[in-house]
Length: 102
Image (cartoon, rainbow, N blue to C red; front, side, top):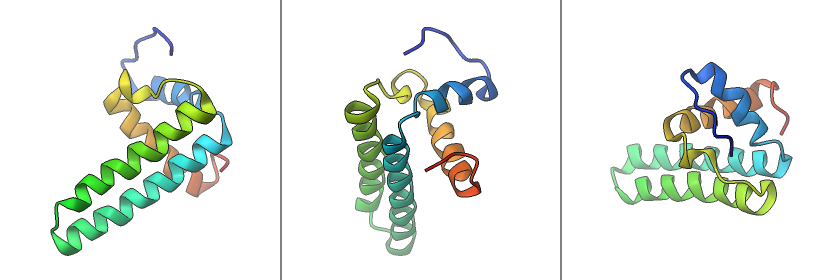
């Protein structure tokens, strides 16, 4: 992971995309993010806190498998937690828009 520090998300996002260059990793992120939305829906519908735990497991579980087994890098969330969370959702939206290939 780069030793560079980012003061703006606009500077961080290209770095974030480079850290997700393996298509299998992006696919796992996409699946995990979709499941996070399903869990959020369930949390709001049922009010059961277990769905919050499921959100964390889906979001981080799928992403970390992608990084450790396919990308072979350390997830950016360890160094840039807020920007990384933003990057996940911007990349998710960019995949839906066709700006990032799945």
